[in-house]
Length: 311
Image 1 (tube, rainbow, N blue to C red):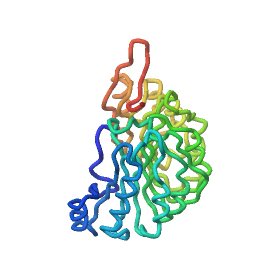
Image 2 (image 1 turned 60 degrees about the horizontal axis):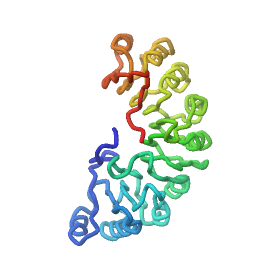
Image 3 (image 1 turned 135 degrees about the vertical axis):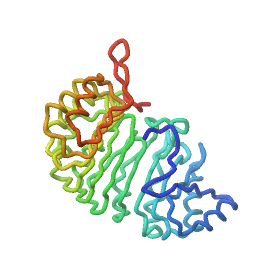
Image 4 (image 1 turned 30 degrees about the vertical axis):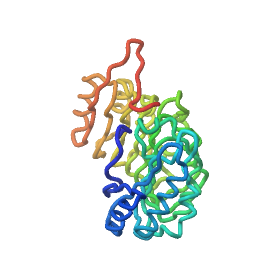
């Protein structure tokens, strides 16, 4: 997934945009109780618009019917973080919220590296039954230490992931987390995570339920591949994803020479800079694994390799 268009489904549910106008409210009332992921948003410069849409949605369909929520623009996302207080303040009105996507905006709506964020630990504390949390953008994103027993899927899509957030994962407790997806991005846009910073995740001791690990969109993809080749957590994964990044033959060689990967069901390396020979070797040496080496890229003349999503 990239950020070229708005999503049409989330957490296994079709996305339904809530229009706070009279016609939109009538349509929402008709759909009240249906299995949909509700989307709310507001135009640029209208910071109160998303709050009005949120209140209108809950008043119209009843907060207890909302299981999944997608939040798009919130006025000036390139200047202000999302209104998390809006959500935490309504915790009692959303007893069945299980899935949340914050910042679901296209590049045209707001470049991914411009989307402001803040500490999301209070949000997790307010919704102990939340199972899925996706975040797009990472400027200012933090995670204070938190214990959350139910979260099973966490994804952060960014052009540059701050190391503070990764350290927050290491300092937190997510015993039910099965799926962790981090877009590491590039240093130019705040991506200062190193392989050493990822050591607690790659060790896996504090993520006992993890079955899918995606370290995507990384300019340090070769270093990641070398670390993954010896990482203890890999032995119990079903899916490993190093896609959207700058993986080259050096990274592919590390994967081939490292620990066995034949237990995986899927290995995603799409958007890469590997040679055709190395890509073919991976497929041949992992015959029972769904190896995705599509979207081969060419290095620029100076040898520069680029990630799929940066600014």
